[in-house]
Structure formats: structure tokens, C-alpha cells
Length: 279
Ligand SMILES: Cc1cc2nc3c(=O)[nH]c(=O)nc-3n(C[C@H](O)[C@H](O)[C@H](O)COP(=O)(O)OP(=O)(O)OC[C@H]3O[C@@H](n4cnc5c(N)ncnc54)[C@H](O)[C@@H]3O)c2cc1C
Ligand SMILES: NC(=O)c1ccc[n+]([C@@H]2O[C@H](COP(=O)([O-])OP(=O)(O)OC[C@H]3O[C@@H](n4cnc5c(N)ncnc54)[C@H](OP(=O)(O)O)[C@@H]3O)[C@@H](O)[C@H]2O)c1
Image 1: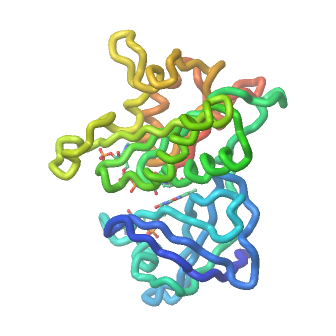
Image 2 (image 1 turned 90 degrees about the vertical axis):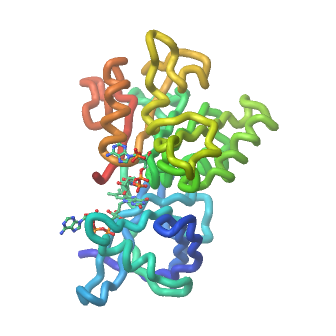
């Protein structure tokens, strides 16, 4: 049976009409324990249905933050208004919301399949709100003093959909200030509709997030140019989140290089890719 806990919708930051950050503060309980990358199920009473509708959302805050649970959510409007998100986007700070304890296997593995500390670079690739679990992972790795190389790649349609840009840029600046031997983090974004007038200020990578993996005529891919070497399963693991098309687009490049996913792991249980999608 589902146990619905109560929380207060303590903070809402509207990024644009259909994209927002929400913070939940549990009532009569502390922030639940969870691992970076996991999701929480939230519920709202939908009056037209006279019942609680529940949906899963990746947690964007990190486990070390004991003050609130942060979520990064798109209001689904097409082809028909989403049931939970429509209710959520008409909620106010102070409203009550339900939650079910966090869970999920989309987490960072500190050890490899042989139980040995995994020192490979971590590449996180998020499409749209698929960025959320990586905001948690980046802050968690930072706060726990990780020395692994972390590359966070985010793809969005429009420049005003590059959520957490300031936080992630600051994490990268800190790498430059302290030195990569102490904190090794880089963040790059790409815009998939560069031809639209609204995106005219964009001078960075263009195309969907998987274009970071695309190599032209034997050249290095944009990701490989960034890290300064060929990406192999011996030096890199991937976490991918977003639309199923984003996962498939990334897999097109990675399977030909011999990478395998956790869901198709080799007989010796090794793998290099974890992914999460709902589409
Ligand atoms: C593990 C996990 C983590 C997730 N994390 C996030 C996150 O961090 N941020 C985020 O924004 N989302 C996230 N999602 C997606 C989220 O769980 C919801 O699926 C999403 O918000 C839509 O919920 P909804 O109730 O508003 O839409 P729903 O009512 O469930 O509708 C979903 C879709 O189906 C369409 N639809 C519904 N009914 C019909 C119909 N009769 N005919 C045709 N189409 C229809 C809707 O238009 C919409 O496109 C995550 C999903 C999973 C599984
Ligand atoms: N843990 C999870 O499972 C989790 C967490 C967060 C979000 N999500 C899900 O991730 C998805 C992202 O939603 P969003 O509204 O934030 O995305 P969005 O803004 O619509 O799109 C984000 C990026 O993905 C591209 N894209 C759109 N549709 C695509 C497709 N079918 N195949 C490949 N790329 C596509 C877009 O390119 P164009 O500009 O070309 O459209 C854009 O660059 C949703 O399904 C969301 O619910 C899942």
C-alpha cells in the first residue's frame, strides 16, 4: 500500500511559463534519505477526479542538503494537459503536497563490477528536465570531495531553458580556481533550435545533447575535444536522462564503440551506461 507523507510546497521559482523549480519541506518529518540520481513520487489531490494523482520526479537537490527536496518540472500541456503538472503549476507556495519515499537505481556507482573503486570519468547527458538528477549528482560529488572527472552536458531547445546554468558554471569556475586535482568538473550546454530568433545570443554548441558524441570524418567528437582524448569504455562511464529519443540518440554513438548498458550488461556484469527515461 502507498504511504502518502505530507509536505509543504515551500518555494516555487518559475523559470518560464511551463518550467519551474519546486521545493518541498516535509511536515512532521525530516527530509528523507536518498541517493543522488534517485526520484521521489509526489501526489496532489486533483478535484476534477476527486483523487490523489501521483508521478515520479528526479530529485535535483543533493542528499547532503537536509533542508528541502528540490524538483525541476515541465508543465506538460500537449496533446492534452498533464494531470499532475497542471495541478502543480496552479499551486501556490504554502500549499500541501503528498510524497512517497525516494527510490531508483539511476545512481553513481563508486565501484566497478569487480568491487574495485571506479576512477573513470563520469559523463552526464541530460535533455531538458532530464538535467535534474545530474544537478543532484554534481552537488553530491562536490560536497563529498570526489576527485573523479565529471562532465555535465545539457541540451535544451531555448536559451531560457538552460536551468541551473549559474550553479553549474560556478561549479566549473571552482575547478579552475582550486585545480582539477581537487575538483574536476566541466559543464557544457547545447541549443537544439539555434535558428530561432529567441536563441540569437547563443554562441555555443548547437543540436540536441547527443551531438556532443558525434564525430565528423574521423575527427574527435566535441566531447572528446573537451576532454582531450578518445572516449573509451576503459576511461568513461555515462549517465543519460531525458526523452527515449535522447537515450537512443546517445546509444547510436556509444554501442558502436562497444559500450553496454546496465540493462544489457555483459556476462561478467560489467557495463558503462545507465539511463533513465519515461517517454
Ligand atoms: C523516474 C522518473 C523521473 C521523472 N523525473 C521528471 C523530472 O525531473 N521532471 C519532469 O518534468 N518530469 C519528470 N518525469 C515525468 C513525470 O513523472 C510525469 O510523467 C510528467 O510530469 C507528466 O505527468 P502529468 O500527470 O502532468 O501528465 P499525464 O496526465 O500523465 O500525461 C502524460 C502525457 O500523456 C499525454 N496524455 C494524457 N492523456 C492522454 C490522452 N487521453 N490522449 C493522448 N495523450 C494523453 C499528456 O498530454 C502528456 O503528454 C519523470 C518520470 C520518471 C518515470
Ligand atoms: N528521471 C527521469 O526519468 C526524468 C527526469 C527528468 C525528466 N525526464 C523526462 O525527460 C524528458 C524531457 O522533457 P522536457 O520537456 O524537459 O524536454 P524538452 O524541453 O521538450 O526537450 C529537451 C531537449 O530534448 C530534445 N528532444 C525533444 N524531443 C526529443 C525526442 N523525441 N528525441 C530526442 N530528443 C528530443 C529537444 O530538442 P528539440 O528542440 O529538437 O525538440 C531539446 O533539445 C521528458 O520526457 C521528461 O519527463 C525524465
